[in-house]
Image (cartoon, rainbow, N blue to C red):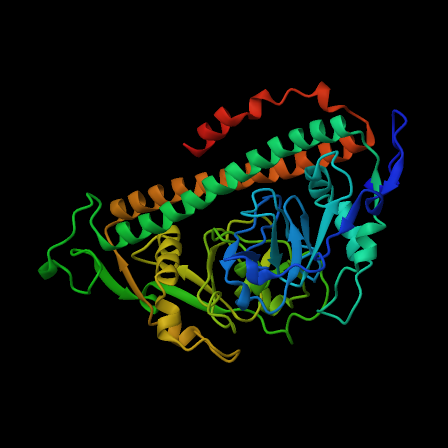
Length: 440
């Protein structure tokens, strides 16, 4: 049941956001020239998913030709698609001054009375049901739709007394802090992974830089072997759309988005499609655990060369613009995945090809020439174990973040409808001490 259809308990009633908030307007007569600098928030600086503060830029008044005026304590809501749907909003609590300016694509909401807690509205607007309700009422042309101010002002919201707003906001802030701590930990582990890949693939395992005379190719440890990908692996194209063109729920066909969306090299199944693949093609295009999938054609430099390690259950094939690498000698499947990931992060594929247009490719012929440097089998296993351990830590923090996101939505629903009370919750297990332990 949608939050807006929920029954309110303990005598609670629905009210409108506009009964308690108004759109902030610039005061008449305010001259920016009287201030040395003005805090300014661009759309890129407005966070997503629950963080409060935007990254203000301090701009000289004469450089601000346009923008949206807002005041300290305002909730800044991105109004343009897809920023609104992605949860871009801010709460200007730590504004370096009484007012600031932001992109024209935000709506600033200011509390009418000096009561309650603006954090409550900030969190309320993050609920998926509320986002969906507002998004359905956006106006404008496709791709440039915007939230009208009156839609936010007419948005139903449960009427809570000031003390209850503060108590609920404290609970939700604690959960968001826990989620943010795991986001930060995942980001730190990701940086560690990149540094580890560079070290492991350019130095010996003891961490000592090799003598220049021992390095056959700059940046690669001496004593390693070198082959081209085509020498150590089978390379196979995916199915063209003309082959895979009808629905068949028995076979999942991976497409480029399944390869491109995930940061950690796993299959992302948000947009998996099902196609009918004729029997004549299924055997050639079937996937088995350990296959390495490679994006060989894309109009984006951020995606070309992205690599994932196939580890799904069930029957799967893969579509065009994906290459399947299946090592048959010299290197393990997992080592090959990590080596290719290392090359992409170090910019190897974008340096080799011009990927500025949709016709840019890194096709099978070119992929067969990718240099594969590898140590002996024992050293390969050591490298894989180290990098897998770091990736496991990243994925652990991502899963924890997902749990906190779900908990946030459930508690927000139950707290504002009165199904549970903030005073009944013990949040001590998620206190600051625990956050520091998570980050350690």
